[in-house]
Image (tube, rainbow, N blue to C red; front, side, top):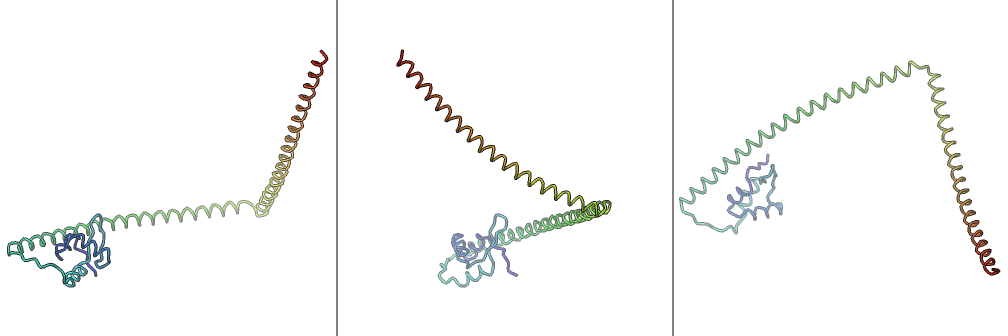
Amino acid sequence: MESYTLTRQDAADLVEISVRSIDRYIKSWKIRSQKRWKSVYVNDNDVKNINSSSDSKPIIITTSSEKKENINKFETKEISTKENLDNFDKITKTFENIYTDLRNQIEKKDKIIQELSVNVWISQERVTQSISVSEHNRSQMLLEESKTHIAKQMTKLSDEKQKIEKDLKDERFDKKILIIFVFIFLSLAAYFWFKTV
C-alpha cells in the first residue's frame, strides 16, 4: 500500500530542495500527492526516488552540530506526521460512525416508505372492491364522455370568441368611417353656411 506521510515541507527538507521545486515535481506528475483537509501529503516512495535520481543536487558540507540539529528537526517532523496520522484516523472513525448512523436512518425511512406504499395499495384495492366493476366502468365512461364534451365546448367557445372579436373589429372600423363622413359633412355644411352669410 502506498504511504503518504510526508508534507511538502518534509519532502523538501528530506531531499534538500525548496518547496517550490516539490510543487513543480507534483505538477509534472513525478511525485504523487494527496490532499487531506488543508494539507498536501506526498508519496514517500516518489520522494525517495527523486532523492536517489537527482544527481545535480548541491553538496552541502555541515558540521556535526548542524547534522544533529537536522536529525532532531527530522525526528520532530516524523512525530508530528504520526500525530497527524492519528488525528486522521480519529476523524475517519468519526466519519465512519456518522456514515453508519445515516445509513441506518435511511434504511428505517425506506422501510417506512415501503410500509406506506403497501398500505396505499391495500386501500386502493379495498376502494376498487367496494365499488362494483360495472359501476366503476360506467363512471370511467361518463368521465371520458364529459372530457370529450368539455373539449368540444371549449373549441366551440374559442370559435365564438374569434367571431365576436372579428365582429368588434368590423364594427369599430364602421364607426371610424361613419365619424369621418359626419366630420366631412359638417365641415362642408359649415363652409357653405359661412359662404352664404
